[in-house]
Picture 1 (cartoon, rainbow, N blue to C red):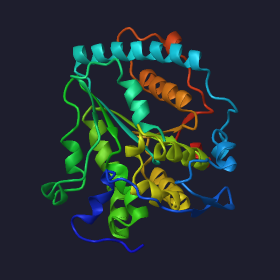
Picture 2 (picture 1 turned 30 degrees about the vertical axis):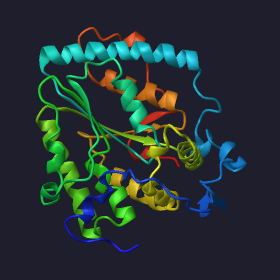
Picture 3 (picture 1 turned 180 degrees about the horizontal axis):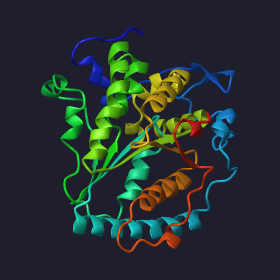
Picture 4 (picture 1 turned 120 degrees about the vertical axis):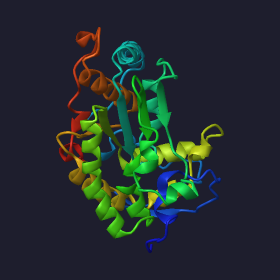
Length: 311
């Protein structure tokens, strides 16, 4: 696909279109080195997807986290987040968390559970739509800075400036020169964020290919969530390897000591949510923090930098 040029092109991938997806027909894709045919419009999910839903990409567990254990642990961690928010209100500390990952990796669900009991007046999520004409003429990072936390705020981004790290170059929405420039500028930009005193986190939710296909299929055929399935998702199905290459390069070039990438394996949404929330709580020494209750990270699920990328 040729690269698009012009002010509007580079920002096209910053938000999914809400247009309904028409029938696509069978798609020829390669999964784990095997040529497959996947028909997203067929209500029947193929066995090769169903059978590898959890194990895709070498996922280390053969069963999902127990539902009752998950519910109990999540509630305990959510109570700690309420403490964290109270500490922020007292100290004025600012928290900024970027959530990135392939489509259907679980970004929205993780953010939702993280913020579930937090006061929405000072805990907000940012999910930007397509930029306005004015924003398209601005410095690339400018529209994101506008949404940064003020004193006492807890802010999450459901996708961020890292659209230019993966989605835009893969889909042809930026030029190779723009992509290369971004990879150099992002670490410098983030050093300023950290130097300003903002508590800054970057989370990449990593999921297997068959896991993604199953989640896409569920969205496509659900009367409640079919709005989540977009033409961008259809295009992404056939570009798995391209996304992988772009992801690996992005994390290699933008993983720094001051702004590291936290990589969370997300085939099991329950474990991914628990480990992500736990990571944030362990990183911030807020008043009343209960380390025994928070628990220790699971190194099979969460880690930092390129070494955690196994698929």
